[in-house]
Length: 348
Ligand code: ADP
Ligand code: MG
Image (cartoon, helix red, strand yellow):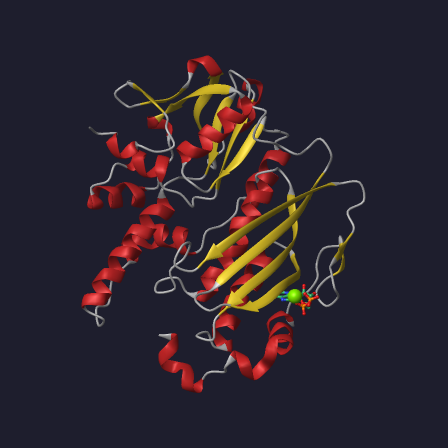
């Protein structure tokens, strides 16, 4: 663990705040033409011509949003960027810049922050975004990371949560529930490790779901795909908190209802087998889990031919009038109201 190796490692106090910022940010290269001034002045300067700008922030707190006993810092840096980019893509926008703010205790040596920044840099390079600023301060307890992401979208191309119309199709990208089941496996292994630190877990059969938890991706590719297919969703949201609460957000903001078909929910085979092993209902996991970072959106029926053959997209239901409510249509053909919570009682 980090503390045991502190002797050979570099104390943050050896560098000072400015030395630390320089050290952590020296590798960042600017790629976006909209970045006029990046790190190094009092503020970054961006220029977007006639585009609309989207801005989003997330704060991640150690012990609340992540656990460093199984989350490597490099992955944490990557994930902190991804969760923000996902929000930018959910507006049908292109992510262009981020800022990174960290509060860190002396418990972390420089090498730990280098790992964190290596993950940030990897995400910035893969998603082609510029790191244009941030803030650095000390914390008495754990680590905090706040990322702000900025993006651009042509006027009239932005997609809000509130545009779904009755008869629209409800569509989701990728598959759901994997990150939550990955977390269940990691939590179980952590307990095993506490009892027997020499245990060498074989996690091969959980590789996909663990990766979905530790190294999620944001669906930049889906925004491009929809653009290539000439499909503009009528509403969109990213799935960070579980499908049921995201469906409720879309429907409430659009003032509509919906039918969600249980049998249409896309599941990876590892999610199915791990749910069986943990004796958890996979639909419950999808509805209440979280951290999928897939996109949930609605399209008009006339766009169905454009999306139907695509393996990245699943039609999982359709939009109804608000007065009809929001329901899960189960495999047994019963209709259950969709609720943000309370799925624990689902099988009662
Ligand atoms: P100020 O005192 O004006 O807030 P700082 O010394 O905190 O300035 O920051 C100097 C520069 O370094 C600014 O461009 C700032 O955005 C950037 N910066 C500070 N901390 C970080 C960080 N953790 N990651 C990336 N950039 C940072
Ligand atoms: Mg500052």
